[in-house]
View (cartoon, rainbow, N blue to C red):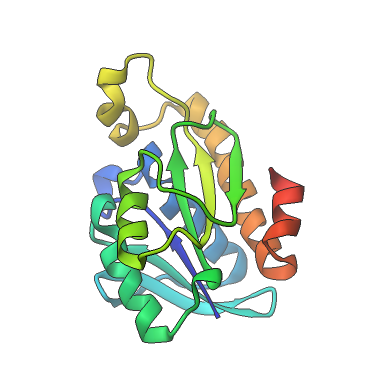
Amino acid sequence: MYLIIGLGNPEEKYSNTRHNMGFDVLNELANKNGIKISKSKFNALYGIGEIKEKKVILVKPQTYMNLSGESIIKFKKFYKISNKSIIVVYDDMDLDVGVIRLKAKGGAGTHNGMKSVVENLNTEDFIRVRVGIGKPANKEDIIDYVIKSIPQKEQIKLNESIKLASDSIMEILENGIDSAMNKFN
């Protein structure tokens, strides 16, 4: 069984923002595979189904980004999921818009949601799918950049990234992280 988590913020005002790429990828993955993310447990919305003949739990923590790990650790413990079967999807300012990167493990970097995940799981040994959102022109504008609505021209490019990230997760499930990294990185 795989635990696939998309990081984001729960309120409607954040739905069309760069910081919600994790939620957007999970929505795409759920739609492609007929999984409804409509149940509620452990301060998260989730859905259970199958993708590429693997049982999956798709999770969107509702704790807000900076506390995402609190919800994830509860799912991990309840369903007895190994770290190698956890996939976390999130936005990354260090990657250009339109770029995705897969990693088998690694640090949290500057992403507060990932800091919470690493801290709560007490490990850096889980799969990441990073969706590039680029950087603002001024560092002072970082918060506004990640939580303001995305301009339509950029949204088109991000939609392609969302589909690519969703496809990369299906590749991980079917053929493993090494195959997916070779194909998508």
